Length: 232
Image (tube, rainbow, N blue to C red; front, side, top):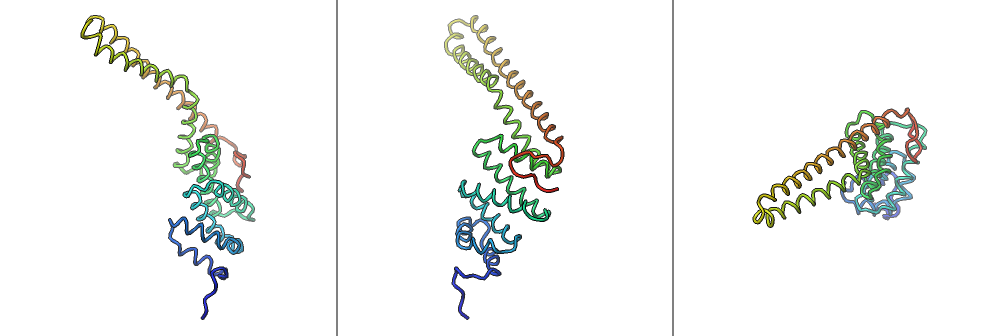
């Protein structure tokens, strides 16, 4: 029996061929999708979306950001436009949002990542891992807002180190009595730096807990970010 040309593979075999590609063969996934994209679109939704999800992950790991963003947005709309929102749809939807959030984190767009993780937290309220990632992002954001106290800490530490070196190398050997005053100054500077750093972290921690509490208290179904909120 004569085999079919590669560009004329029956739809029934497209999915079977796809399943035979090793999981981490990202370039193979990209090539497969590029060759059979039209046929993939004509597959049953569950098979089509599974292939597209693997292709999406390949784009993510290969850092093809533009194509990743476009496909992610299209996939979200495809899923939300289904007549029913099954558990499998929710899982895929969550995976897409988390991949997009990871991309935003790598691009240092913390606010956008927080918005996505807020939605994930709303959808998966029992998922401790998602809640911890969300809290970590909020804490990072709040710490970045406290630049002045952190700058003060760095300045005090530089002063402490400079005075300690100066005292040890120059003052103490010549003026041992005066070195005690200098030691008191740089020790005090070090203590102030530690207390400032500790206080800054406590402030950021309190604000972060309040922000997370506010997110958890959002009414069910409320729109949190730019995508249409997933069906209940």
